[in-house]
Amino acid sequence: MKKILFLDQSGKPGGAELCLMDLVEPYKDSSLVGLFEDGAFKSLLEQQQIPVRVLGEQAIQVRKESRFWQSLGAIGPLIPLLGKVVQLSRSYDLIYANTQKALVVGALASWFGRRPLVYHLHDILSADHFSLANRRLAVTLANRFAALVIANSQATKSAFIEAGGRSHLTEVVYNGFKLDLYDDDAGNSARIRQELGLDDRFVVGHFSRLAPWKGQHILIEALTRCPERVTAILVGDALFGEADYAQQLHRQVAELGLENRVKFLGFRSDVVALMKACDLVVHTSTSPEPFGRVIVEAMLCCRPVIAAEAGGALELVEDGKTGWLVPPGDVVKLAAAIDKCYQQPELRDAIAHQAQTYARQTFDLDRINQQIDRLLAKLF
Ligand code: UDP
Image 1 (cartoon, rainbow, N blue to C red):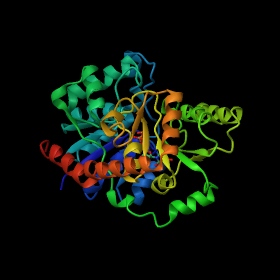
Image 2: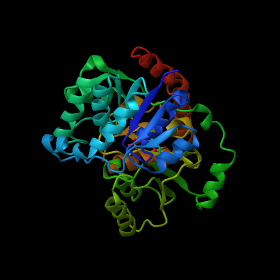
Image 3: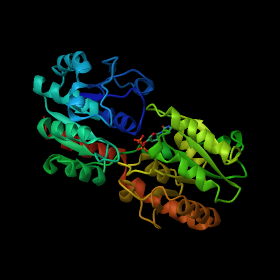
């Protein structure tokens, strides 16, 4: 049985962490997830009986605006963490870094401990998301130390190569999803609609942590151009220090007089039932999305989806066939697309069914995990 040391910097369950949780599953009897901080992600792993250990109290601060030498300087606080990871890695055959800061520690540990390193890249390494310093740091470490870089989309792979990453190291593997989770909701979605007072509404769902580039403000503004019955639920919380943005969204709703048409539900773990309670799911990221788990999840729930036309979303949605694409940040076009969906129930049903069939064929977790296993097998 392969023994893998998975590393992730986050104690919070973002998309990269939820993806990791699914791909660790086949290795859980012989592997360990090392987290750099404590939090809800650890509890989620424990619920799945996945061995997990919190390795550090202090996360590395590699800030977006930091210069290269500052990024390197920020590695200082990591030294105790690095010692632990090097020690631990002796009991494992491979180190699997799932985030950028995990790459920093994983790269050095793989060098000291002479273990192969895999870097699972969930980020678009472009100026939209990262400073030049951080891009350089990630690419330099990946090129020098990783035996394999798994990119979560072609968009992610292209940005990695454009930032100087080596193409021959990189394989694209999409996120996988447990298809049976989407089969039946046992009346949960009807209950949710009733509890939230949404019975007679046309419900547009937005599922994402609250962060400026996720563009919740774009949806809120678009609502002012949509029929009164159109109501939004915003599912997600400010996970990574974006509390100001969350407050800004609440102010925006109050200023636009939309209190009865926007509901903030915070972070939820019943995303499937909530999506099924929606008539439509929208994705509004203003910068290119690396993959966009929520887009696939909506498809698997058989809900029509409108996505921002950039990054990984272009690989997931075929406009007019498996969903609709609108230019990122374009309030007017988003409102028009929502209105079209609202006015044409048959069209939205047809699109949702086509998308569901496509998503079930393309993003089956068992198949994706086999793909990863074949890639890892070459490294042992
Ligand atoms: N999600 C969740 N609860 C929430 C909001 C989001 O479990 O309240 C999940 C969502 O279902 C998806 C993930 O968080 O699986 C977000 O992944 P995505 O790729 O869309 O964005 P990321 O967080 O990676 O930027």
